[in-house]
Amino acid sequence: MPGRARLALMTAVVLWAVSFVATKVALEEAPPLVVVTLRLLIAAACFLPLVIASGGSRGLGGLRRLPILFLLSLFGTSLHYGLQTAGLQFTTASNASLYTTTGPITILLVSAIVLGERITARKALGVALAAVGVLVVMGAETLSTLEFGRIKGDALVIASIVMWGLFTVFGKRLTDSLGAVRVTAWVTIIGAVSMVPIGFYDARSTGFSLSSLTIDAWVAIAFLGLACSFLATWLYFVALGLTESQKVGVYLYAISPLTVVVAALYLGEAVTSNLLVGAVLIIGGVAVTERG
Image (cartoon, rainbow, N blue to C red):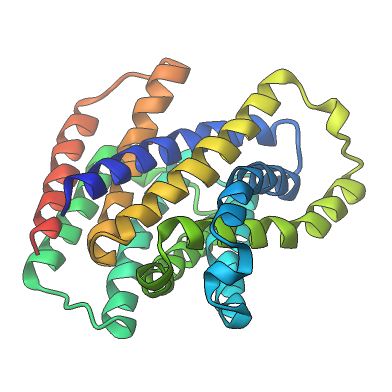
C-alpha cells in the first residue's frame, strides 16, 4: 500500500474514533436527524468550492452519473449517518464500536463479488486477526455484558456499517474514473440536500430549536462536519483511489481500540492490557491484509 494511502487512512480512523464521543455530546441536546443534517450541511459547505472549481456537473462528464452518486450518498451519508446516529441513542458505545467489525467483512465479500477482488488466504487471515484484536480490546467482561436487549440500537448501528461497506465497494469504481475529491464532494452535497427536509421534520416534531444548543454541542457538531464528514471521508476516498477496497476496509478495525483511547483521555478511563494486546493484533491484521 502506498505510504500516502496509509497516512490518509490512519488519519481518517482517528477522526472517526473521536466521532463516537462527539456524537454522544451532540445527542444530549439535539435530535439525531438534526445532528446528521447539520454535520452534512457543514461538510457540504466545505466541498462546494471544490465542486465549482472542478467544473460542476460538467466535471462529471454530464448528468448520467447523478443516479449512482445519489445511491452512493444514501449508502455513505444520509442513511449511514442517520442509522448510526439514531442507533447511538439506544445502544452503548461499546456495542457500537464492536459492530464496526462488520464493515471490513462486508467490504471483503461485496468487493469479491462486484469488483472481482480475490479473497486470498493472507487477506482472510488478516481480517480474522484484526477481528480477534477487536474482541480482545473489548475484553471478556464487556462482551459478556453487552446489552443485547437494546436490539433496536444494535440493529441500526449494524445496518449503518453495512451501508458503509456498500458505499466503499461501489464508490471504488466511480473513484477510479472521476477521482476521490470529486466523488466525495458530490456524494456529500447530495446527501446534505436530501437530509434538509428530514432534519426539518425531526426538529418540528420534537420541538427542537437551534437557539437551544450550547457551545459544547456546536463544537461537537462542527467537529463531526469538518473533521469527520469532510476531512476523514475525503482522505478515505483518496486511499480508496490508491489501493484495493479490501485493504482500505480493514483499517476500520482500528476504530474500536482508538475509541477506547479517546474515552480514556476524555473520560479518564484506564488503558488496560486488553487494549495493548488487541492493538498489536489489529495492527498485525492490517499489515497482513495489506500484503495479501
